[in-house]
Image (tube, rainbow, N blue to C red; front, side, top):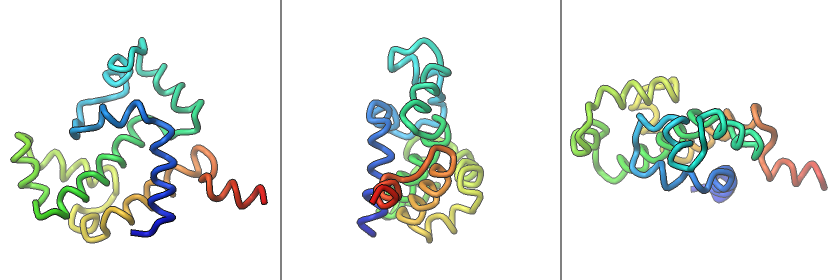
Length: 142
């Protein structure tokens, strides 16, 4: 994997360290309201404000792309998306739709691209809405 991509991805995730444990395992029902309550915040909009103040994308945008990277990584270890979903006690169709809605691509295309390209797409999507990546900011400051 490209070290710059991994570094940029890690920088984005450092904006939300308290959310990462909530995102394991993958749970599509964990919306902003549920996550906020688990973090001791009164409502989902409080979580959204916290994310905005840190320069992070909206909760569901960041969660969905994080989940997508995790799914691709997991399925690269030999499981199909259907097998993973069934082994997790979930309906595979839900995850195929999730992938399509999030990536606007089929699971076959996303899986073929691999986790690095999924990270690049997420970072590209997130950056315009919240500012520049740290690396771009540093080069602009130089």
